Image (cartoon, rainbow, N blue to C red):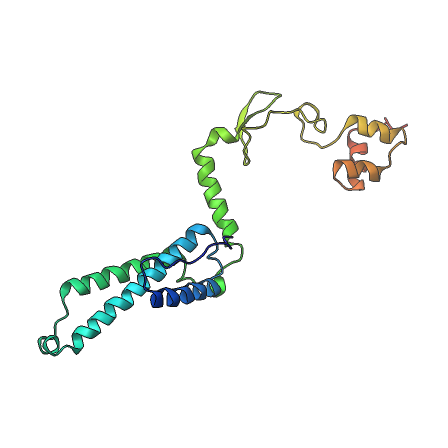
Length: 208
């Protein structure tokens, strides 16, 4: 979250800048998901464009009050084009910022979902950073975390690349009565029942 971001209101008059600052804060209050630097920069640009729209409409109003312009009944096409282009850009920015979404449906976990999408794109574009090699069979596969700064390691809790979590020296201490099943389960990060299951499936007859 970019708590240190400060609204600047560049290109606006002092009066417009003050009004823009209030509108910027209102947007943040109503749409709390706008908390990343990139979002806040876009939000400030949105406020700028909305201020320009007020300028265009004010100018059109001035022309309408002009006697000659009223008789002709025509607003300069260039001014209308600028207004329409500006309005289209405002709509585009609001869509990018998710301001048209139902505020009740804006999830506090949206940042997490956005991060997941960005991570997937990064992982797809940098596969070698997630590559690893099995120390047993030399098979290459790709993990969901970066591995470029790590080396493959044979875990003492999986024999010969097995899939069952256990540790022979640990179980030997259990068999000798130096450790309880609760202490073994604490080391393995399992329940005490799992230790009994290991005893039945892999160490039956070895308990002294």
